[in-house]
Image 1 (cartoon, rainbow, N blue to C red):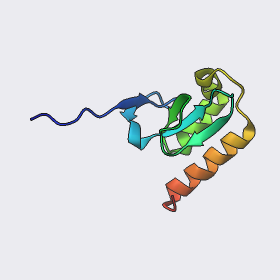
Image 2: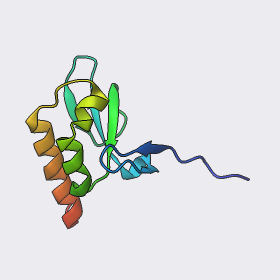
Image 3: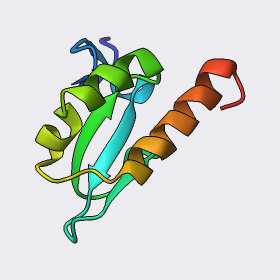
Image 4: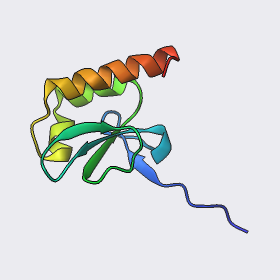
Length: 93
């Protein structure tokens, strides 16, 4: 018997392919709202990033998230991401 196939996604920060469950999804809804999708199941256009601030900084600087979602990303989304990442890195997740 073969095991289940693990879906892989590319991190927009470091460019590495990783299992989908290890990444954080940022989603743009049909209405154009951008939010952090912790369940990974919200409908809309999604982009994935590693739960490390080392991946968020270069992605923000190079506007990779804006390019992936084809829209302007509000600072509140980046603030929320930084807050989530700092919580995950310190183990409080």
